[in-house]
Image 1: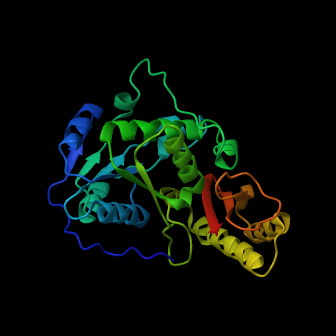
Image 2: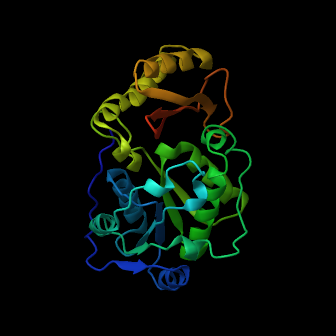
Length: 294
């Protein structure tokens, strides 16, 4: 389990809140450099705290950390959980202040996507499989909002969590292809004591679903153990992962894939630098997790 260390920076007593892109752009221009952005959708937990801690470390005592809190409607499909996505702004503000953020950008959707909005960013390679196949249009929404945040905040660096491994690789490719000057920083997945990856969606789980959800981490570790034991056929590793997850009665597999860590193309032989990625439903709650073997 990754432990969130306390940074040697003082909590911020005065935290600026920006509600519009114009206000955020103006405010961020006046903030001390280096400026580091942590994009989030709110409902912050210890995993987000680890991202803010990393941002604070990158910015240093004299730099600035901005956390965006925006539940981005463009990355949700018509049958997905936008309407019930958790909102906890006051708790989020307290966590941001405690971990040394200087400002929060918390716009309304109408400010980010005003009437007549028609411009989108679509990465067409790394986003194809995994969640890109399961959630059409999802990464178009992710790329669009993150590039907009880069334009509004103008950070020198941005911090993302590797629980969403595909998202990290898609955004890295977008930044490279569009010549973004923003440095992309990725942080290991924060977990509960029993191994479940921290996620805002964990709050949707019933007590029994939460109990069974630990099977995701168990399955991934068994897949890695098989590889360490000499197994190189992706199909064999996938069967081990699948068999383990199928042992949980409430688990409904969306996908189990073994992909190249850079291109996210499925591999037949798991030689080096690959990721075992899973998406599994428990009831109506879809959880993702992965293990990066490198």
